[in-house]
Length: 291
Ligand code: HMN
Image 1 (cartoon, rainbow, N blue to C red):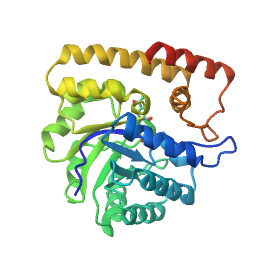
Image 2 (spheres, helix red, strand yellow):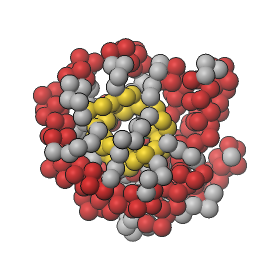
Image 3 (spheres, rainbow, N blue to C red):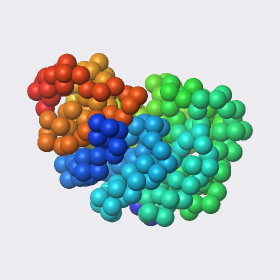
């Protein structure tokens, strides 16, 4: 079984202007993450992949393309969560058959699901697949909170091996590390990679690693070697970059930065907005400033 620890790029979606999948661009982004960024893993079908705006068939196609392009060159984790539980179950089987190393699922969102419903959701997704599940915990987007005690209940299922922790409350992160030394904790906020690493995470999954992999690797390695002052210098530059990216439109700007490196990263999918000339010009400035 393949090691799941390490740094993952959350794979971007590449789309044509009409919203269809840009397969060539997607393959280039995948290769860039493997060959140039030297990432340990790819998180396919997450927020960064604009997954929640896609049909089931489109999600499957992206999972297929990623596996076909990556083969066994990198660890592959597939985000299969959806508030359509039947779809999640179908996707979990689909990616497991494709040979993905692990699955992940966002907490069910939109309706205010109670904990027993959340638990039933995870138990149902993993029931018939022989794989490992990483819970995708992102309360600021889903509105769903899970307490440390509730995580303990979810983790009773041995197939549920970890959590992608995308939350700014590091008291909770510390409590999670303390409570679950044998579970995998992945940090989800790139701007807090250094403090998360100090607290003992097992890896990190992020959108900006598609373009900022070298600095992320430095932060992660320096922090683990206890060279905190040096890691902080790199985190400062990284956060200047992330602030500029967020100001200009998160996923679009990352794609435009990839475009500057000759990668056909394509457009975002509506209802995300199309690029404006100003946004393109600003992305060029950001590229010059940081790369
Ligand atoms: C995913 O599901 O695609 C990623 O794992 C999400 C990841 O946690 C990113 N979060 C969101 O985009 C909501 C971060 O990398 C984030 O983009 C970054 O820290 C900038 O805020």
